[in-house]
Length: 44
Image (cartoon, rainbow, N blue to C red; front, top):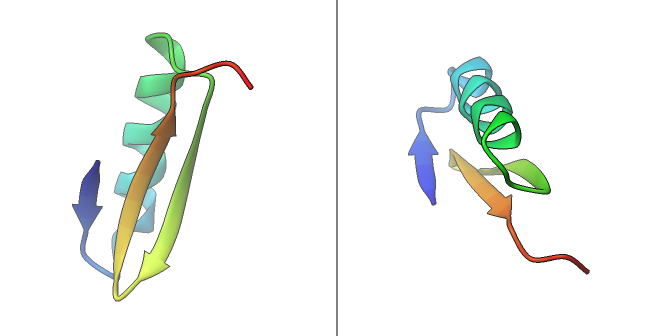
């Protein structure tokens, strides 16, 4: 969904929290060279 530089996990978390406040169910920042922001919108 979005990539952030390796030293900027805080930006990934900030963006994830924004998505939580705007209707997603969960988010995850995954380390993959860059921080990858994944958001989950579908109920499980």
